[in-house]
Amino acid sequence: MKWTVSFGAVPAILNVVMAYLVRSEGAALHASVGTMSGCILNIILDPFFIMPWGLGMGAEGAGLATFLSNCVACLYFFVLLFARRKTTCVRLLPRSKSFQKFIILGVFGVGIPASIQNLLNVTGMTILNNFTSAYGADAVAAMGITQKINQVPLYISLGLSQGLMPLVSYNYAAGNYKRMKSAFLFALRVVLVGMTAICAFYFFQSEFMIRLFMNNESIIRHGSRFLHGFCLGLPFLCVDFLAVGVFQATGMGRAALAFALMRKILLEIPALFILNALFPLYGLAYAQLTAEVVLAAAGMIVLYRTFGRGMPAKKL
Image (cartoon, rainbow, N blue to C red; front, side):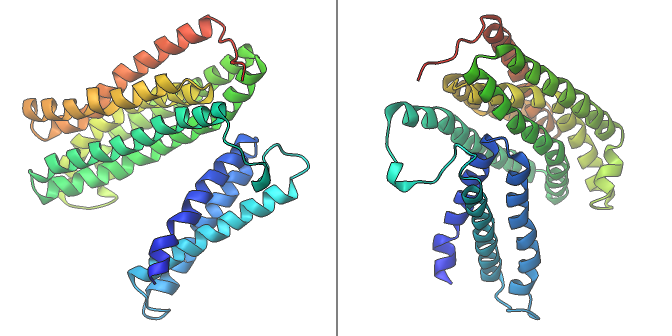
């Protein structure tokens, strides 16, 4: 099964790229259907490939199931693009492939900041878990549960940010800045109201949320206090995500890169060290809040100045 490990990442990467291509054409529903079809198939295949009553392949079976699921998702996107080849600007024509300078700069200008941000997210998570492990197994379990709970609104904010990006990029390229600004303000209102409501629910029902995962008083006590800190950052986090989404959609690669570096290197990671020293264990939950307050304020300032000067479209 070595081929599964070696080549399993290829369809996974293609799946993500194809989903973004389809989404960029405004076909968000098809992007979701293609991606979710792979996820659902993976869930169905996992037991059959892993369990003894199926193929009994164990961990290798999980890898093979993921590989096949991503292949099916990629096939969906290829068929979709072929069926829509006369009505879409996105076409997979190898013979027309060219390495033009402005395309390369555009791709790397947006892609590198996003890659650095993902790398730093893993680094920040590693440091957070290392700090938490010093306080025992209950603290580690509570932190893990809290992070899983907090991921739900986090991914909602990220999804809204990605959903806004095509609208911003379309109108930016067309010079319709009024509509672009309206789309951003609408998304901002929706996500702020939603994240504030989730924040309030998490804060006042923190023990209930932790108890859903594990009925251990020590873990519930730790997790409740962790969730208080994490949930307070949600409204600021969504503003930060939307701002970075606008930066990426309008080719403001330097701003996106600056925010990626600020988020972890200058703000969150140093805050982990400082807050853990000042408020052992529970201070860790407020490092993200500290970073996101600064980034949300900075993002709004940059966007205010950007929208204010009319955002002249770049001539490519």
